[in-house]
Amino acid sequence: MSMFTWLTAFKETEKEKLMYLAKVLQERAEPGYQEVQTRSIWTDFAKDHSLPFHCMMEGKAPVITLGDYQHARFKVVFTADLDAVWNPISKSWMHLCGHHVQSIHAFALALLYQQGFFSPTVAIRLIGCPAEECYPAFFPTNASRFIPGKQILYDQGAFVGASCVLSTHLADDISKRAVVFARGAYGLVWLRLRHCAPNEGAMHTDMIAHIKDFLHSCFVDMSLVDYDVYIRTKVVHDGCIRPSGDELVAFLYKMDVDAFLVTEYPPLLQDKNLVKTSRRLLHDKYPEVTSLDSILLQGATDFGVASDEIPTLQLFVGGTQHITHDPDFTVLDEEFAYLFAGVFLSNLIQLLARDELVMKGRRT
Ligand SMILES: [Zn+2]
Image (tube, rainbow, N blue to C red):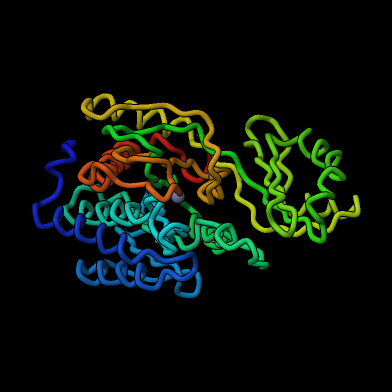
């Protein structure tokens, strides 16, 4: 199977459809667990292209299956986030994290599958994942615990048997045609210490110092009624302990602190072999696209849920302006941001399947 350039991979009508759907998804930005219209765009896409479709998470997560997933030798899960973030300036939900683009990358994989690009040994499960963003982050008075979408999908077996799990995300403020290979992302444990007035903050200095002994960093927001503690957790492969949010709550309870777990994101560790192969593919086949490297990212993501067990890669795509979650965040280079990643990942999947570069269900 020959490689093709990303600009000629799609028929003109397909390209127009992907660009059109990106606009529609952008206009219909919705909050986590309420991605009703976004999900119907997935449903319609599957129907229009006669693709097998079902839902997970009690109907909240749309799933399109390419190939015979049960019997395929090389199974890939591709996740696309469905939810948007709150823009406090316009007071509306907007895709300031570029999540609408991830659905387009999933649809691009589906179109290339239908073109007969993949060998029959490959099957891909495209999952539209609700609620990557932490809902209470936008409304601090929200008092219920937030469980990110991929955690529920993981618990329901969405990633079982996958040879690798792939995803994309727009990169922060990189206007050029570039792909960023990040080592991973720190995890986050977000605790709310109840019945603590801001002036009691000093009382907890010792406690935070203790937590810092085994965690990467910790910062405190005392602007809220309660007293919020955000703890960055290290990746386990650094040889550090990674306490769970529940363990931290129990630890604080012993210290007479009434803590509530707002949410928890596991650290993401990108698979070294997937990064290496991707970097080589980019270098060999797409010299017009710049390759950039990044250390661990500060922004927490639920994409790390499977990365301890299954080789995982999230590709960060340039063509953007401003930092994600910034009210001014925009896609500058639509052609690149929307169309490149699907083609690139298709080539990567073919390469991995051919050379069996990732071992099924375990790290390499
Ligand atoms: Zn995001």
